[in-house]
Length: 587
DNA sequence: GCCGTTTTCGGCCCGACTGTTTTCAGTCG
Image (cartoon, rainbow, N blue to C red; front, side):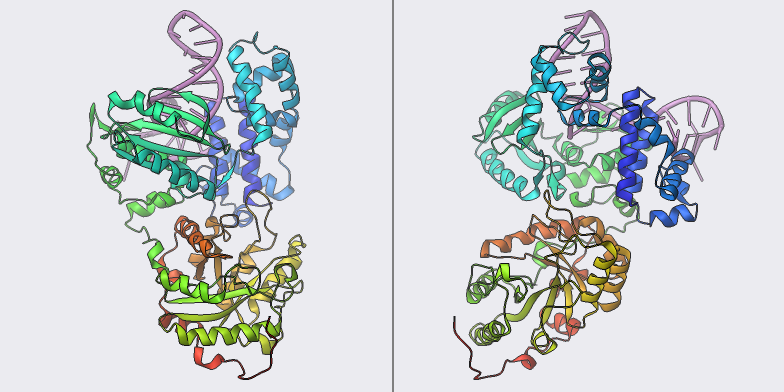
């Protein structure tokens, strides 16, 4: 049983305790415990074995005993007993906005509602209005919430959020009463999947109403969910919600920090403030009645004797402690990227010619660019046969003459076959400057076989990069199952880099795993997996993931100059010319 | 249920908005 499953069970327990009306601090203890387990750096099973689980912050005697039982036997008596008290369908009700444990408890106890369908029916029968704490409006909102649940999944890729954000930024820039504007929330932290878009604007108090109305007039707004003096929530035509907070200019830095979160990060920061005898909320840090002035978010951290913690790091993953110790890493930045390896051309399923890709790379100021099309087994993506490779390599060699300002590399994204081998014979493999090994099919393989398959690919001496490690597609497909510990060890031993695939649907390697790679000294590549020129822009998302994962420039292979790359991979472009004058078909 | 350089008992982060109330509870972030 992995950490995520254990954490989920603890969360469920917390929810059930709420339904029972238990002590709120006991509930919080289970929620905190769930987070501690999920964020655990160490191996959970080993902690249980060595009886050190109780030493983990947030895990005391009670939780430690329960989790130990769960790990050892696969079951937890306490959890089972609680579960028997409630029908499992009841938990669907929490997906309806505005329904929390207290209201769900009433619905369950008074109306015997156990499912979303029953709830919808009860609303249509007008049966909620008589309940204490409910009214006509609540009933209508619940009905609307159920409607929306059917219509929207309620989760969006970070790329959707960024698209919305850019439009909103333009929109707010046209309004001169907006003194400052920023994104906030999970989008600013560059989470891979977001629930809504949080934005923040500084305006004079007298302009609040006008700005709220201006926001509501944003063309994509389809429904106003809530409108108060400082907070307005809307739903856009895309289904995604946007929350706007209006603050004064002097509150802005504090509000920006507060609404950027994460919740866990904020809680810890506020505790720090409290220890220093200060009170902290979204409007400031107060010494008695007086707000300590701050112009920027960095000033806010300064009040607490902390360096500026980049938003991406604010997940309570040790960033505050690192800040206190002066050990925050210098995170990789967009301008650090010197070249790219994972680009598809029209030889396989990309839409651009190799020369167009090269021109784009030159224009963007890259030192090197690698072409890596699909390999022969990927027939669905028009994978390259050996004769296609010959042709592509000759084209690359002629382009090398034409564009001396950039190094053009011959790469390939080789499918990892079922048995872990790469997709060409050795005499073909040796013609490439580098090989990205990626899984594309048979992702549902059994864990042990999948582990062997990945290890086989990594141990192949021609493999330089492991592409989109798990094969996951965000919001639609789980990644494959394998023994992460083993695979990371083999990556480390064989000096194979692991890719952060920057396509917003993938963002694989996950940021939560980056720190592990970092600690083990495994190198990272940040690559767009571009199939058209605009796909180059996806690198921004990959940078976000890398930064969330504490990655520095020195750990990123394509953060290195070409000369360093030559050392790292022993690249020698002169050695790999294809046979001249060979007869190949033109397509 | 967790935690401890003012503590092994007595705390546990904070505020806005909404809807239902008539001063507040519940939800959300």
